[in-house]
Length: 121
Image (cartoon, rainbow, N blue to C red; front, side):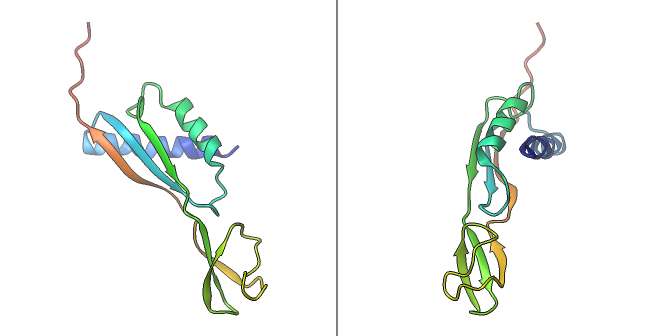
């Protein structure tokens, strides 16, 4: 379950941005996890939701877009849709495919707030 380490990396990216940009809270985190990225989106969501307590992501809505896989077929010289890296070209049946889309895992959007920190009571 490498999604736990991926979630830790995403959390670190957001917390680094919070420190650098001086925001205190995130209400929306949007990610892209492409179909060919090797990421189990449900496991990633579970891992993220398990790690956000007492961070700037606590209470944030987490949205994960899943762009479809695409590849360039060297034989057909066409961009073709694929579901897996082991798929054959849907036109020629060949396997000379170079993935061109759906391989990404990235933070695409943060909706942040710089609410003042509540005084300690």
